[in-house]
Image: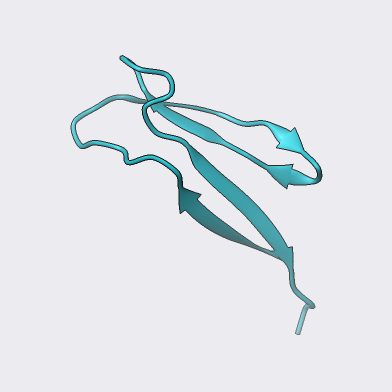
Length: 54
C-alpha cells in the first residue's frame, strides 16, 4: 500500500478553474496544478511511500 504526500510549491487561489497534469520521473509522480490563466501559477509535488500491509 502506498501513502501519498503532497507539497504545494506555489499557492493556488480560490475561485479559479484549475488544470491538472502529471509527470512521472525517477519513480515519482509530479502532478502540476495550474489556473486556466497562468499554467505555472500553482504546482504540486506528490511522492508515494510504500507501507507494509498490516
